[in-house]
Length: 514
Image 1: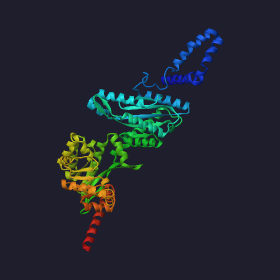
Image 2 (image 1 turned 120 degrees about the vertical axis):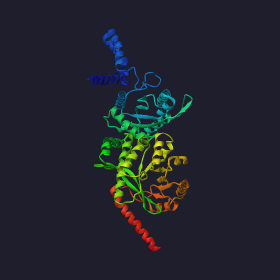
Image 3 (image 1 turned 135 degrees about the horizontal axis):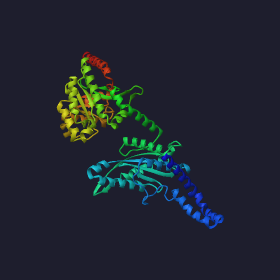
Image 4 (image 1 turned 90 degrees about the vertical axis):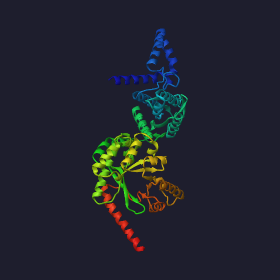
């Protein structure tokens, strides 16, 4: 009831502003005063003189459409409700004049680090400076406010031309201004920013400020997930993808608990003998209605919702179950390798949990491979991550350094963390049989690994030529679509038997030809 009353008052104020203070009314204001005098004499003139200011104040005529910097009437920090009101007002003005408006959300990254190292006062100074930089980049009729510790809203005043190109250019200027290094308390401070925006032409004609805010939030979420310093414009396709993502997010726990998310396994083979040297467990979500959900899509959801630890438990249990079943079927698969992210490696009970699972399945630690990204090792010299990696190596697990060549792990780190094998990133492998530069680079990596006494495994092998050349260069193991695609555990049994038959047949042919 109260909200409806406030809305009606606001609508009346807007109508009075248009009627009393629009260009057409201002032009006739002298005539209105003169008419009052002629019709009623001095009493009517006094009434007009007193009444018009009252109406002016009620209608909000003493405020600017968008208060400008330095006027003392522009709030710095507002809530969501007030922000939506700003957008409603901006949309109303734009539609009244047949013009366009837009909302931009800017999210800063790096403020937490500034607060942790230099204190909250320094971080607040950076927030205020960032807001000032946004306002100084905008026009007088635009508005910039802060919505939280690291988020800002920019509302653009009504304009004739606010197409995608113009908005992208403005977003880039805002981002450049806000990311300029700042000298605060005798030290240079740095932040990065993600920008998501939505222009009114992309919305329905009856869209509200809430609709525009939600659209900008979706665009910002997409930008933040592709950051740092990403910019995204809202679109209807983005909205559909966001709805699908939210739908999957609501189902993720059920999928983990009822077996929809399980590992599929990609074989790894020895280049000298051709035999299976292991398999890598790769998470797959088999949705009952959607089919196979792309890993990149649901892994992001798991990470954002803090479920990576639960995923690790599920993949480990299913992997060890599969390994034991292959043993019982008479297959010789030495090891199953499982990926562990830095989030999972921070778990102080990780080593204890893995030891318990191995004991439960009656498997020795060397049957489990722990795959850790090179970037994780390079960025975690101390703390739980480092201690867990060292402890897993001491336990006897086989340690693989994944995506080698994409990070900056030192030789000392390779020794300290007891790395057994380097998994060479596919960027070094692609077209190695046809690109001389790739050939030389890969040969250098393999030579270094050989001198350090480390095994090597090349990922992303897709052709017979790549497979053959890797063997010639001394790479110990290969993995990729050219060998086999990831498959469910029961299909591994069939594939392994067929692969063993092919190896035996090739050996027989070799003996006959010899």
